Image 1 (cartoon, helix red, strand yellow):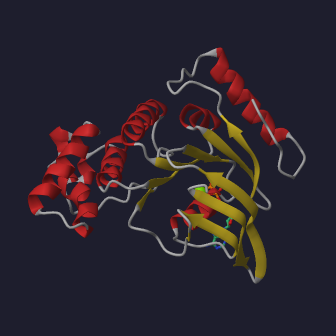
Image 2: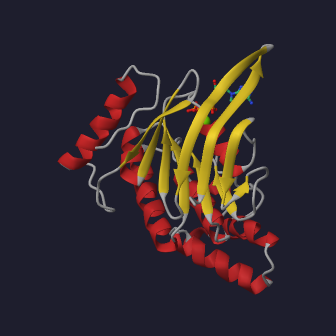
Length: 257
Ligand SMILES: Nc1ncnc2c1ncn2[C@@H]1O[C@H](COP(=O)(O)OP(=O)(O)OP(=O)(O)O)[C@@H](O)[C@H]1O
Ligand SMILES: [Mg+2]
């Protein structure tokens, strides 16, 4: 049985008195340890699907199961990283990373030690006593990543976590997240609207299209773990995925690169 199993999942919202279909008949299975990118233009339902998987706003049709259980609420075994970092401004870096650990049965010393380890992993040891407002956006996002990974989650949900960052910081953080996730063997569900980011990060890319939000294709990225954005193979895969968005058929397309 797959680790995450999404069957005929659908979600509607009421907008201006009318029913609006944000997600229609999504079918997807995800294995433990996979890095999955949900890719598509604004409004195609990426966040809706992610929030449903993370248990914040369950679907109203079909089902989403994780490890054999229907998702209905957020689980302490999973964490979510949002675009706006979600740090507590009145806490230092160290105390922000300790925050998630407060729900765990750890001694104060264990909490401190675990937080220090993850702050070091994201390269911010020097800033552990700083407050979020004293850090750049990229550094704040690193704190959010440290805080998320410190609780040793089984799944990390990320909703456009690098969307607000400049291109160079973004590339650095993409490498950091790949490195950390390989080391710790996490299952990652990562939302992006950037094709290159998806091809750089994912084992499989879930290509979504809007009106109504649907999965158009699931593409396995046939590249080595360590990817080179300038290589011919990389650009080939990127172009193939780009082509998918221009194909007219509104049904699921089998697509092997
Ligand atoms: N709480 C809500 N109430 C009403 N409509 C909603 C709600 N949340 C999302 N929608 C609608 O569902 C559609 C999908 O929204 P969603 O936020 O999932 O898109 P997205 O792919 O994440 O877009 P973006 O890239 O802009 O973040 C949109 O048309 C949006 O207006
Ligand atoms: Mg979104």
